[in-house]
Image (cartoon, rainbow, N blue to C red):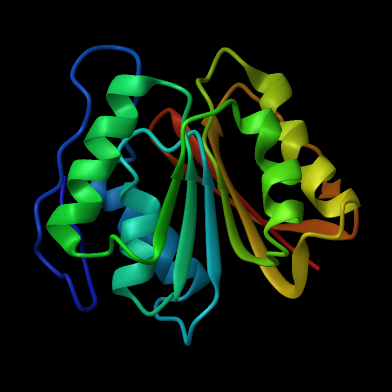
Length: 182
């Protein structure tokens, strides 16, 4: 796993061994960023279910200005911290070792508005995709925000989360990427 483009292009990242996390494949990550970017002029990234933090780090490498990564697994948080240090993004990545359901409250306390929201929960836990609606309902998304959900092909996500409509769904093997915009 590596950073594909931008300031940190080619940098190899660690991921947690075992079945507890499922890193986004490089080819899927590249496709996602080709659909939503591929480069950014600032903005705040939020990654729910961070795993390795690779999606946030990719966005930062491509020009995003700050990231919040939510991950409740202590070992995964250590991997994320290691990857953040390797990228030298210590001052712009905020790792929150907590359940993703706490993200709205934490972001509200920090007065943050999200430009890119990545949601990639464990595939068996489909109820977590509703966090997109919670975040939208709490007015934490900018008008130009993009919501990116990675999910199993068998999971059917709604056509909208609040004012954010599904504009695209692309399949990659048994993975689907669904993208929402206002």
